Length: 260
Image (tube, rainbow, N blue to C red; front, side):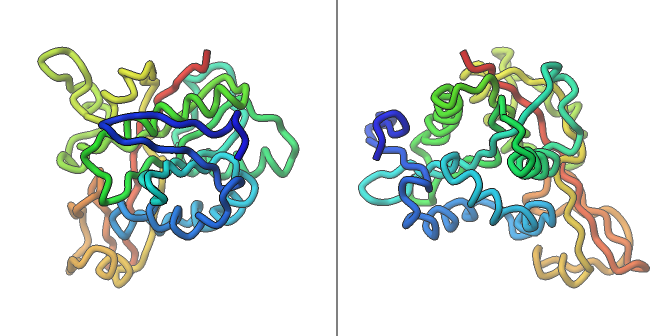
């Protein structure tokens, strides 16, 4: 355990210690289980993530964080280093899928990173409701600072958007509370931590599957072609029964933290 990469913090009367998977490779299985515990089934079938996940975990084990409380992983943070251009308004529309592919290519080509891209923050089921996600989000910025990077770029999945799947993301992110803060809770967290909302990445993830796949992933039936609202999805999924295909294209929101 190296003193420059581990830290202890207090939040909601809980102490946690941070370990990377490079430091604690024996935590890998538990880390993966916690990381996958918050998502609807269809979200783990993004072909770009599937094709690159093992490489990311191997290449970037020092950027996969476990927040540990009393020998249990309370939360995980998954990040990848990559090089971004100075004009952050041009971050790509493909969001997550772009960042996953670029991080692997940058590493294999020897391109030095200047940013971390956050993939997910997930709090374990027994630790939810303690605001650990706020601490975990802050730890992303602290990790980038320790690494000497300039930015943390996040294709944010707004937590509350799933309740409004028919509202375009461009419209949704303009909603505010009476106090003028973002309506969405996860966007509010990042604003309070100093994050800047840049733009919507409309095609952040693209998940195709057969009709049978989608019925298995969702427990729903899709008897005809059209747009369907699916629990956990931010947009409707598009079903084409003639082609035997369903496709979900997830919009996210680029949020940038500039590391001081």
